[in-house]
Image 1 (cartoon, one colour):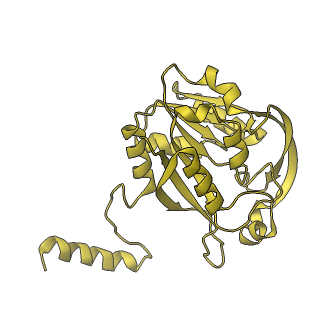
Image 2 (tube, one colour; image 1 turned 45 degrees about the vertical axis):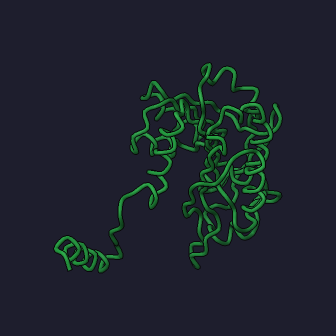
Image 3 (cartoon, helix red, strand yellow; image 1 turned 120 degrees about the horizontal axis):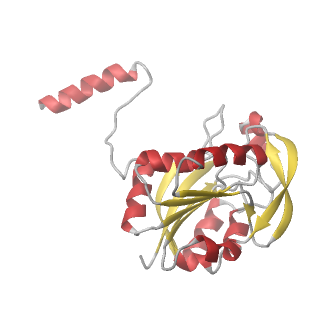
Amino acid sequence: MDVPRRARDAARSVLRRFDLDVVRYSPEAFLPLRRLAILRQQHVGVVLDVGANAGQYAEKLRSDGWSGRIVSFEPLTRAYADLERLAAKDPSWDTHRMALGAIDGQTDIHVAGNSYSSSLLPMLEQHVKSAPESVYVATESVRLSRLDTLAPDLMHEGESAFLKLDVQGFEREVLDGAAETLARVRAIEIELSLVPLYEGAPLYDAMIGWLRDTGFEIVSLGRGFSDQETGQILQMDGIFVRLDA
């Protein structure tokens, strides 16, 4: 056995005593690295961060090395206040307090106890059972807009976008309101539900089929929301790239 391999195996043996492990740091093994590679390969000019919550996703993009424009959307009052404070330090990061969907208007959003599970859709029993802290505790009236309505003022001429959706079951409505904008989207990152979590929300197979029919092919998967007790995977994070890319 060569020396580097012996050293690696010895390190892994020690780390496993602390429930840790060592794996190769590569875009194939880590979704954040795969995402960053796609952003660069597709010459993306702006990331549309839909369902930004308090800015966790955009902040991770920055720490991973993305320096391009970010436009974040978040409807919840408290989460948006945190998002706005964070983005104020970054001249290439804009924020908008609103939800995105298939129509323009006003709607009510269910506020979850953990904030980031909040949705415009009713939450199903499986979700509450798997994450009790996600139970709804309030509702808020929020502005609702189509991405197609906003895009002309958000995107620069000739600019390509990366569309990230973290909208807790409302993905199809957002995409239905972005039919024209999708022509300028090079990649989409979306949550794929393996079991029903929100009333009326499409499951992973329907979303994968719809995106393929719309011109996007899945290129990366990452583990998402899991049951806290059983470890069952309930959602995956998928990245899709245009077939003609």
